[in-house]
Length: 310
Length: 137
Image 1: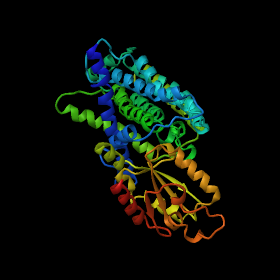
Image 2 (image 1 turned 180 degrees about the vertical axis):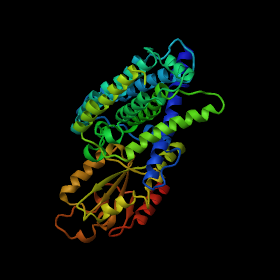
Image 3 (image 1 turned 60 degrees about the horizontal axis):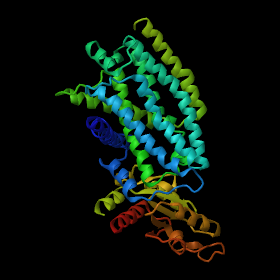
């Protein structure tokens, strides 16, 4: 019991994932600033933001809205993100427990934050939040099938194995999955799915700042917004980590390999950041077409290539 | 209190309220976020929703229509909130002081923490104002 709580709250779970995610969030903002020839925020900026929201600011509840659900939704989001973090990071960091990282469990847990945002947004009673919530719903419908096809590709590639631990071990004994044509296609599909899951710029229409003023988060302030920030930090860490586990050999944590692990993580976040900095926001219709036609096509081509052994 | 105040100072998020402005001050405020001045290195971000804001920037002359909206925006903001009046119109009324639609300078309507005069103030002046705000808050 105590060790499970430790897993959940401290080491691969909440605290560790939040701290690494906060640093990745700083990395993302710093790269964004460098792309725009700016200097960028200091290293501890995500922590200042989080503690300011949590400790200093007042939390305002909307008068016309379901206040309890409005307040609980960010807590659910943190819970879902943390559970996903534990289940991804336990096999990834090679900690042996009874759980070997079932992909379908992880798949469902990764959707909990998005659903919590929708519930919170619709509970706030704000029309712009409702617009954001409906856009987020459409976005989930668009990318979820693609993400499932991506996971199906990984499962086919390692011979119908559903657990993350075996997938990582298969890659370590043979070669990383990204070293083949189908692996590269799956990597492209996975990167765009992550982009949509994180709601970063080509697919940030749920929170479109200039258009519907942060949409789904418009009514959140103070501590509840701090919870949402925490979820975003954790998701920014675990989704790239998940991609690395599935396609890029996972992490090896001894000696010089730790540096490799960090570089892999930073490289994936760098790709996400560069996509976000070089693209405009698309309309929701374009996003759905992008995933439903092009990304699904790419994923199906990858599945066929895997079937023929490429 | 020290830690809380330090975090607050290091991460001021700005919400921009434009009154009946001639848009010069708006442009100068946006200049502060461009590569040359880059306020993000102090942790200052421009946010879209008043619920996320720590600083309320008010510029332009406040006329009868703006007054109610300014009070509403101020009441909707999560406290503590700092208010900065930008430009001659925000600070005193400037050119519009005698106008029949003028509803008083910003500090007659809501409490103001810092004034940045100028028509329009240079980005350097806005940054200097924000530094003073951070030092005294």
